[in-house]
Image (cartoon, rainbow, N blue to C red; front, side):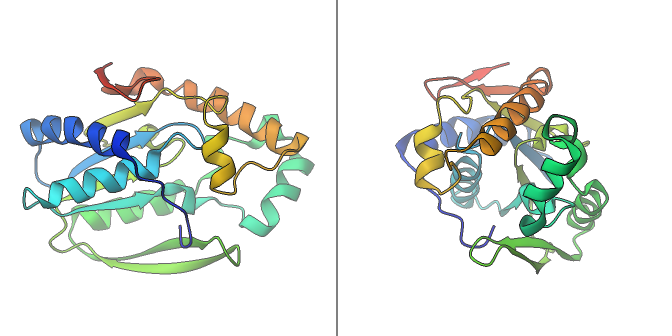
Length: 211
């Protein structure tokens, strides 16, 4: 997302190094990594740390933030969720999976790809063009990323929104109101349902362990 604040710390780079070792043992052409976790758990930070670390090994990895792919525009989402019932609509169905899979296929085919990119300043959705020719890996991060079909390495961050309130506040994602609390609780339920899909877990101490 354009304008997002990334707080990459030692814990992210340390976890990334462990994950990179795993990747180097198993990587194939057009390898896809998925990172799921709740709001503020460090998904984007970890994705960027992995991508940057892979450059040292001559591997070009591109982060793909699928929280850019909501079907409902940011300026309309609060009203839409409220009118349709937060507990009914918050979850997997909010994403535009057709566009996600189109962009993934364009990565696999080394094509020029255009996809959505949310500008967090204006809350408008821009279009970002990426040339996937020469890109070796795709790192998909977002709440429900490891639900994506075709992920080669699925990583799940176990921290819940209860543990990440400080990070959410710093990144401007944690207004103290009932609406946000209900959204976080519903996202918590949906994200936790994906844990069995993981190959690697990032535990409460941000250590990488086998699932």
